Image (cartoon, rainbow, N blue to C red; front, side, top):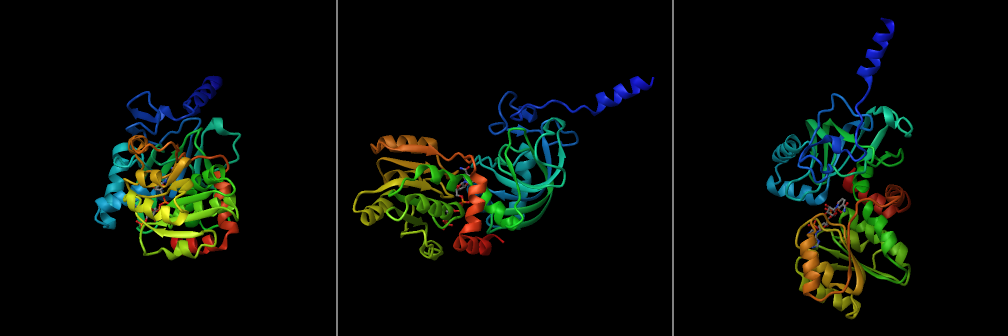
Length: 359
Ligand SMILES: NC(=O)c1ccc[n+]([C@@H]2O[C@H](COP(=O)([O-])OP(=O)(O)OC[C@H]3O[C@@H](n4cnc5c(N)ncnc54)[C@H](OP(=O)(O)O)[C@@H]3O)[C@@H](O)[C@H]2O)c1
């Protein structure tokens, strides 16, 4: 009798086995991975053996998505809250149906699945999830504060990371909102580190934005004193953030969606040679051709922007006879979190500027 009782307890407490990539949470359509899925299961009353459940503190909505949501809401925070809640209620995750993109969260670990007993994490640890909210099961119980100019939203709710999901513990020496802001775009400077060579001319489009300035910094570090960093900013307002940056060589005010105007400006400052590497960090659509036209033949364009259209880039490059390498902005790059947090530790200019902006 005693043995049967014990056996029942073991059976009841056994967690269900989950798929490494989280397909067990996909509700619709079955058989696809969580990112392309329409709907995922955000019922967290029981977790699978390979999941990490977190109590969310703040969401950082990716800039393309938040720009779109604010535009749809006419900049009204209450409407922003409604749109965000509707997205999560409908899809079980924060995947903006118009941009397809998400963001990241910070939170506190609540439960860890039994099969993850070897990872260096315990209940109560504060972490940042480093996979997109567009695939992360999420439940919003209450929206507490919407920081309209920071793309950040404090909530009560829970989010779940799969075994394949990446995360990092939040550092003690960097304030949470600052860490959250830069970790959201950590893939961008980390890719600059790989793509830029000494002596390169690099153009960063959307250069006064969060990822833009980080890219300028890392590009200069790689390009060195003989390299040249051209910061392309959308408008006059705020251009001094790029002008004052000690790692920027030239600032151009220009719109990437006005490709010919931008080309003319870049031709002027490069004596017609154009750029070896271009990174697009914009938050709005139709900027593909601006990036493509200012890249020299056989140069590289890194499309970090979530507002990038593969079709527009591929057919646009073909249509303008540009033989260039075009790279999709993979948000993950090994070591990206440490590299980006270290920029905040090492560079006083960016640390001060981003502290003012995001803290
Ligand atoms: N690949 C990934 O994994 C990943 C991860 C996170 C984020 N992202 C994406 O990366 C992009 C940048 O993110 P972020 O956080 O750095 O955004 P951000 O801080 O909002 O900066 C975006 C910048 O783009 C500028 N911009 C907008 N339209 C432009 C145009 N037509 N021409 C030139 N500049 C323009 C904006 O200028 P104004 O403010 O003056 O309009 C702003 O300075 C977004 O699309 C975001 O969704 C990608």
